[in-house]
Length: 366
Ligand code: GDP
View: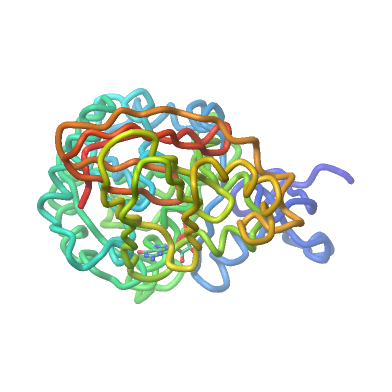
């Protein structure tokens, strides 16, 4: 195939992979003006679609943000904070001020205290070395908090450009599409423009005569479990509605399986409550620790699914981590899947999660 470039954004056109930059269906190559699917949708439906990029590519591409002056809006998924917080952000954005936006608020139980959550996010960001100006909680899908965020952006940008950055799947497109819908009173205002030293265009939504809101590609974080699941399995583990917590009173010597994707062994400690926050569709099985290995071997892909029989091979083998828990309420986090809250008492747990998606412990979020 001869090399063709998208007239909209300059990406090299390819017809193989829908998820990657420059994809266009083969039929589009017949047209006089060739647009990639992303630019096509932007032009005809005023809708944007996230395009993924690896961290390294992204760093190269947006290093020019460092040299420009503007406000950075870093969007994360509050259901997967560790999978979506970009630790290299200060390197990317230089001295520019950062607003942290936790999206998908609708997924957390209604009992969640937003102020506590904001404090918590601020601290997580600080511990990761990211200094944030302000923290907002929104739901792009429900529209919660969007007006307040828009006001804050307008205030803090000081007349300058706004760059929206995030990893893939945090809901950046959903958010930007909401903004596009609100600004399409003026026709064809949304443009893509080349960024110096890169091929891919950034989407620009004009904010006033001299400044724009700029959509950047989604950074691929290989720690996200989404990269090891089939699309069907991903549907099961991605919550779509408010998460209903599920509580288990466990004695030591008991195990919980989260589908076939993660496992928690309660190894040592007094009887204790384990409160689980996972997609409501993901089944949790309790068993005896001594039987857990055997159960996993004989029922992975069946009783213990996802993964299904067909998608087992996508999943890397489990890695074990042992955690001693004490000193207040803690969450044992399985990135991208959910977390288990344990309170107070001393306990030793061993967690099993797919290699590359390592589990961790944090101060309780809820
Ligand atoms: P992007 O890759 O960051 O552009 O993410 P998308 O906008 O494509 O969203 C990724 C997934 O998250 C989609 O399934 C969205 O429907 C979902 N999503 C986006 N925003 C929200 C939200 O506020 N709440 C919930 N529950 N889901 C959301």
